[in-house]
Amino acid sequence: MFKELDPILHSQLRLSIVSILMSVKETDFSFIKESSHATAGNISIQIKKLEKAGYIEVKKSFKNNYPNTSLSITKKGIKAFENYVESLKNYINPK
Image (tube, rainbow, N blue to C red; front, side):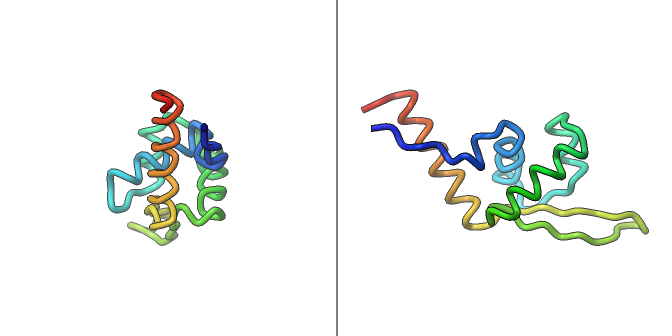
């Protein structure tokens, strides 16, 4: 009856990062940090886990001589998020 929830997305910070990326085409690390109120170190760890799962794409570059990390969600990440939301709906309103 109940689907297993995706363990990658079931972390509050990883879910926050993916939720933010669902609403923008691309964003930078600073925006994620400001939006989530998490520490830079914790965000870095969670980004690596999401990237390893294939849910997000990470691009590193320089902007005005400063390192810049850009993040975007992949098609796999979009599908995983949509499945996660559907699974949660079944928990809230079981059929």
